[in-house]
Image (cartoon, rainbow, N blue to C red):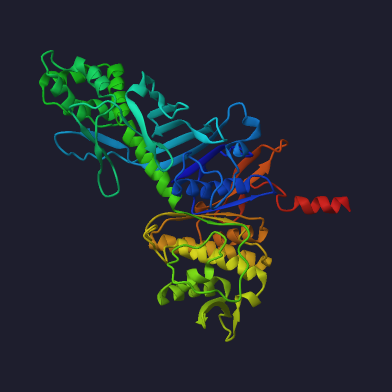
Length: 530
């Protein structure tokens, strides 16, 4: 996932397109929309990993948005849509094949998919109202769905395909988007194929829904005596080439001299019509591929809530595999206990480097304890006897460390990209320790880069010390300024609308596009009141 955009979710009228960089820090006053933006990520995860009748599970395991009507921005009650848009790096659909398997890769392009969620009209449920998919700068697919969940309309670029509900059917709800398939069977069946990092991905055999429209568009290029079966075979060999390459590609799919001459003399209007029909035939696998990408992204979101679980002196051991840390850190002891000796050493070294203490898990008489020991010290102290801030920061550090693939699981292999969303990591910490959180984030980014395991950290904070420390680390050359962004959330005069702007650091670590007095205006107001 390259970027995300959210519209009409609570106070977020329109965030604009937000790039997902290795480190994104969210700042703003209370009730300015920071948490809404950050919680959209665990919202996506709980929606994807839970079987539901709606695309979004507004109230679930990780976050609670109430219902669709609760989550909808109050100023948009007339339009009634919440929109999520995603930018995906993606080689597009390459073609449809019947007689032979050809792999003709195109240059990778970027796909932007925007999904509109609207009310289902009963029990405050929600449904997908429309889905717009833009492929690079050339192509756009616009799908609308009826209240019954059927395909109500389909536009491919400037062409409208009539009565799509007679050609396409919604088979099931995918991870996030509907899975659609052609409705009418035919004698000739085709397989769709998609580009992937290791080659083409084979989909199940299916009949392209708009193959008849494609064949009709191609007829002027054939000799008058050409058989319909030949036309279908030629149509199935056409791939989605770029506009400037499409004429040359179209001329190469059939050996007839008449065909090549016809293609060379064809009008641009006819070529565009044929190309739009090719893209329409590929709509089902395109939609499924986008759903796969969004589903994979959401499944690899890791979330740490704002108030972590209070530490206990002892924990009762359980012989359970703990492959993931709870979003409140409630299972921290069992999570650490389940690791191998090498993993335990890796974690305690991580804590020692960035926080100055080592973590020891001790067991005895049916009890498990979490103990901390200063790096240069000899005495080990139970976590329950340490300050409350330690119990709040330790789950954060464990979640960051785990996001690096230190304890890979079948659900998330170590090479899978991970998005880590953390609320108020600085909670109950002294400003000096708050600054160390920046070191933890930057250290994790470096480890992720060195191990080629993509990790994006999104952290909401009220800590000036944390933000300033990031600038210091940039100045010291510990991190590139391009890898960091600060999202500034500022509430407008209306309590239901938030402006989101992007601030950045220059190479010297100085903030750019930063609102003057952002952290100090409250103190100035207090002085003026005195």
